[in-house]
Length: 312
Image (tube, rainbow, N blue to C red; front, top):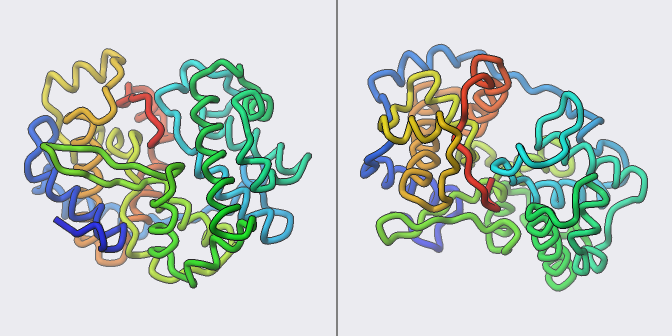
């Protein structure tokens, strides 16, 4: 296992391989990796940022604040069936569009304002009920961002980015130390870090041209529930029949349960194997391909694993 002092992606990579080697409910079809990887080659597509759901204008400070705020609350997939979604929008894009409009109309929250944010504030911006548990969790995450930026970075969001000195790995490691981006589970008594949102924030900072970051290829896949679903539908992940039945019945999985950890960890390790087999696609690039693929009807028509948590 990697040490806590190791870079965040190495911690994630090592822990997920360890879980995959012990998993009882989820198995990687390693004999299918080469063929699956060959089919991925040449399929990378980097669509331009969407102004409807991403803030493209404004100065660097404003755009840095937007990305850090959006990725701090880039969770809630287990709650999507219970929120008010915009027509034609998924749960994630409903929240992303609302936050974009809030920044566009009122400017960014300052670090001080964020540190005092309540559930009613984020609910008003998102067009949701203030009593919804997800709004409470969003407000807590954003308050932590505000406090960290105020205390450690002089109240400026772009200082967070600059503190990483151009490294995606360093930025992911910095964010992973914040409560707002904390994402680790326990499996057989050992900590299993995933740090999905800390790593995706680093990728987004580069993608949104807020900073040019090196070493993006060292990031792992961004462990959520959609990519394991895609890999399951495609046959690269095989699930225990009992787990399959629970997912197909729409049963919520307990966050941190062995089955839920195995789904995330095996997906991350499977993508590491695919990246090695491809040779020209990084884990983060493969993650992006599979996440986009998950929007196709073939995948949307089947129940995906759901869990209510603040990780994804």
